[in-house]
Length: 541
Image 1 (cartoon, one colour):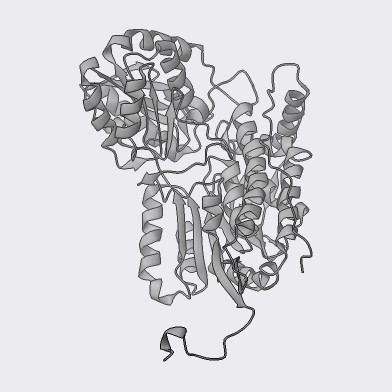
Image 2 (cartoon, rainbow, N blue to C red):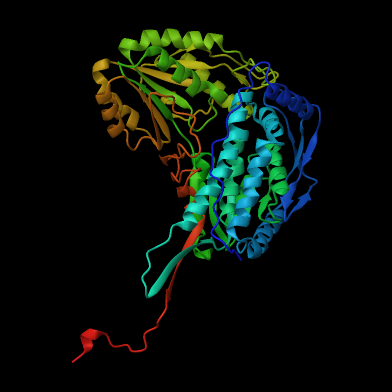
């Protein structure tokens, strides 16, 4: 039982290390990278605090060096998923009653472990498993995950401290209960921070979790579990399982104790899960919380008054960092005709300077896409653009998977604002540009808005009236809207992230809004002097 009103440490964003030549962190992460590269591991299932290895396994390899085996990971059978659910429900009995400051201490410790002894290991694992260059890995697996853990603790304390008004005669108070059941977390390959946050956020609020990481991110997910264990997350609170995604999901959703899903992944998969939840709705003890961030077709819109070099930099960074494998990556660009020539020249100069290869060589800006399926999909769209009369490839267009899944940063210029690569999420280093007439600025706003996705977008302009018009016209086109910047790089505590339409439920990871989805409030009214006569004054004679 808590015996104080506790104040948690004030959350601050973790500083991003530079990894510039000659810095100690550069040497440290390279050492960690080589150590991991030259060793092999077996990643087990984590169920009720036990490490379970199965006979059925799959291999792990770096996307930039796909013949090199990093290790294997165990694949679950249906019985393992049922055990994970049972474990989560049993652990909930004690975890839900644990005082909130004790839960806070666990996840604050996790943040400090990543900040210190695990920093270079988790960064190196992300470089290997997801082919991120060191700067992208540092921002993601170290800094953003640390920020999620620190700020979520602060947000939890703020949620608990906000209380209703009371009177002299009665005391009103609100408690935020964990959901009745367990939470299912499904995480993507592209951000180690998301993989950590999606199970951790519900757990922090007193829930227990069955977590399925992406098959392409198991290697760094293992490091997250090591951190959680060392930080003191009790057995059964977060259970990590890998295997056939449909089997796992169907088993989870069949449980009457399923209480919510925390999801980041494809729009198609999320819609299918939503449909299955709807079909099972009469089986559940409570209405499940459905929280998801899915796809995007994120835009950059350049007004005639925008500075061409700034537009080019926004495209170079926004479209090609991490090979465009971000839900927020710029993949469609609208550029005013009057500035296009200068933008084009600056962009092509940037791309010509890009180096591509293994993240071990820190001079490489571009590395590999995540797996062969992604590679083949991108190659298909690039080849189609080479054939289509309404498309022209002005940069890139080549690809090679002999050693790694390397796709050149590719720029397509189209005369059709509805060309397939202007409307389809590709999730790779391919950006499509449409050049509009300056006089068609307002019409172009309508084109930008006419999209099934609404995750991120950016407008670049010097004209404030144009910025005002775009901000209003595109109010539903992006959950994160950037003015004179690229549409990527949301920072926890500064720009809570999420979108609407087909991009998700917009529950803003890294904010109070997200944590509120993992709690069920109960209002308690205590009357001090209880009435003993039913009659109200108006009944008097």
